[in-house]
Image (cartoon, rainbow, N blue to C red; front, side, top):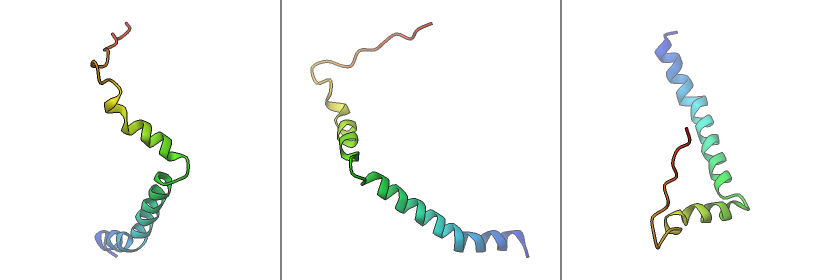
Length: 61
């Protein structure tokens, strides 16, 4: 069997199932209970410093 044909058959069958399972896992991870606090905190990052820009800390040598 030719290498291209073998890889094509693998991609059409098992890889489709693997990527679908990965997608479902990510969706479950995002909508899990308790994740909303983390996402609300991350969503509010642009609004934390309304009066002045964030301070730039100097890098330590």
